[in-house]
Length: 82
Figure 1 (spheres, rainbow, N blue to C red):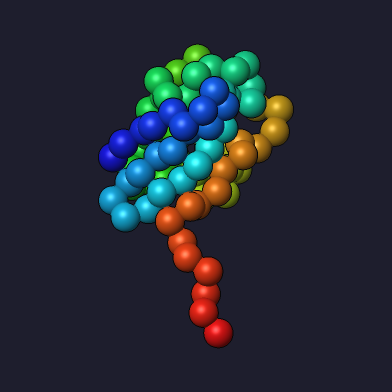
Figure 2 (figure 1 turned 180 degrees about the horizontal axis):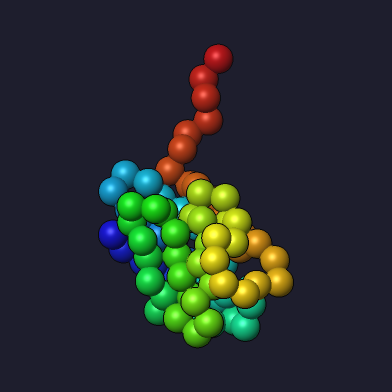
């Protein structure tokens, strides 16, 4: 598993053969998610400040306080061929 900051506001997270691009700061209180905990089995990231937890797959809040979903997208998938 790796975390790479690609710009001021974006992180790239790689877990096995899956890659995700997420916003770098938690929507709740802007905790820096590069310092958060990543659950590689559940594909979730947890903010180090107030423990809001988000799905890497959908950005949905799975636990803790938040004002909105996390911007998240999977980047390793290629477009389907007809």
